[in-house]
Amino acid sequence: MTLNTTLRFSRATTPEEMFTGQWQNRATRLDDYKPYLDQRWQEGCTNAWKLWEEIRGQGYP
Image (tube, rainbow, N blue to C red; front, side, top):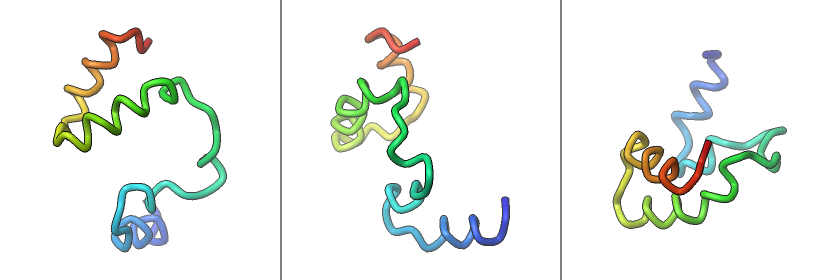
């Protein structure tokens, strides 16, 4: 990781601030599941493996 990337990550106050740049508006396979993931995150589930298992059960490839 470069110094600029490290500095950008260390200065971010929210996760959204870390993901800026040319790929920000690109469509992904995860788009259909983002509302569910956002809801679960707000409920306090921050375990990525658990969230992945949950969306796999909903049809995520």
